[in-house]
Each structure stands twice: as structure tokens, then as C-alpha cells.
Image (cartoon, rainbow, N blue to C red; front, side, top):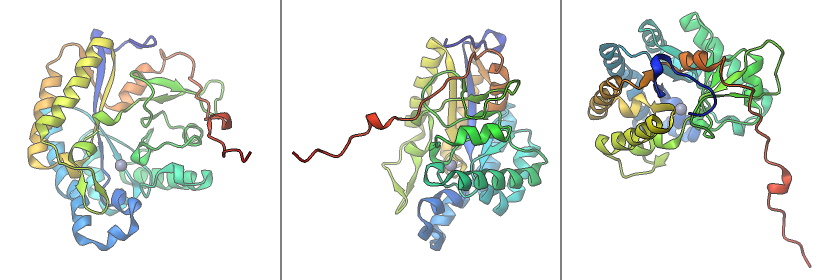
Length: 298
Ligand SMILES: [Zn+2]
């Protein structure tokens, strides 16, 4: 196991079932013209309208607490859904306001998206979110500092580790808890397996749940061997569909049976590791010397 992270109950690895409740916001951010398509919007609306309730039932039945990342715009459109998730005991976390990737925004615009999203979620749940996940997992170099300044406890958007770690930010202060990074990876996302939306994302072919679960299980097996933190990301507009939800339910039951895996929401994982992750890891931005320069004209 990396660092000195020790999981509860002598578990070898931690596992979290996280959900990104994108709704229409993700498709609109990718292409504003999508908003004109009632069909495309219905593809996305399936998440808050149908998928979330089904997934909440499954999680309740399995007695698993989870983390739901909700863009502010989606929360404003479906306030009752956000209240339902919170009332069921799950963590509500930040996923931008318009689901715009931070790398396309100025620092001031990133801050505005952060604050607007936090205000929306706080108005609905009474709690200010402590966790952040960048839309499209596309974190900017400025965002860790903006999160730390606002008291966020963790981010879950980066891919350079198996185990949570403290992420150095420009806003380090003596006595302030470090920002915890809880790493993710593309193989543990349902988007690549299931998402087919003509004109927006046409990855295809749509995979069977058996294929997706086999991939996710293989990564969990590896985490159990080497130690780590397995973070699965599902989208209710995708994995809320009946066959996929049934397969996810079976996977959750399987994971809960494993004696060496600790299942928890991401905020609990951040709390758990905060005291044992060591000094914050400083990640230097890419220097200009690594960028290809224009060819010389000899
Ligand atoms: Zn998203």
C-alpha cells in the first residue's frame, strides 16, 4: 500500500460507489445546440427523473452510503432530487455549476462557478459541499488553490495515484487541513461503456453490463492485491437504466461480501486518510521546456 494510509477493520483497500448526476448540464456544456433537442435532453434527464430513484433504492437496500456529485444547474432544475439524495443519507458534492470544464475558464470564472454551485447545494441541503469533482475530470492547475481557499476537504479528479494523498496548493496555511486528492481513472467510469448520444458523444459500441462489471471487478482485484482506493463513477442517466442498475446492484452486493474492502463515501475516505497521508504532494505545472517549440527556419 502506498503512503501510510491504514483503512478501518484491517481492510486492504477502500471502495466508493460515486455518482455524477450530470443531467442535461453535461450535454449542454459540450454543445449548447444540444439544448434545442428534446430527445437529447430526455437522454440526460433520465438520470434525475428515473435513474436516481432506482439507484437510491439499491443503495438503501444494500445499506451503502455514497457520494453524489451534482452540477448546480442540475440541482436548480431538479431540487427535489437533490433533497431526496441528501435525505437518504448520502453525501452531496460539487460538480461545477454549468458542468463547464475548468480548463476552459479564467480563474475568476472558475471561482464564480465554484461559489454559485456551493450556494445552490447549500440552499437545498443546508450543508456546504466539502468535496469537488471537475466536470469531465478536467481539473485546472488553479482549481486546487481555489478549493483550498474555500475550505473544500477533497478533490476527486486526478489520475496519478492508487491511494489518496495530500495535494499541495498555493493556499497552504499553517494549521489548515490539506486538500486530499482521491484519485480516479477512466477504466472505472460507466461513460466509456454505456454512453451513446449522437452529436455529443458517440464512443460506441454500447457495452453490456457484464463487460463493464468485469472491467471494474478486475481493477478491484488489483487494488485488493496491491492496496489502494477503488473509486467507481457511475452516471444515473447511464447506470440508472434497468439492466445496468441490476448489474451494479449485484456488484455492490459482491463488494460488500469482501472482508478486505472498506466501502465508504468519499468524504469519509478523505477524513480517514487526512492524518496519515504525509506532506502534501507538489505537482509542478508543465514547464515551457517540455512544450514543442516551433521548428527553426535555417
Ligand atoms: Zn459530469
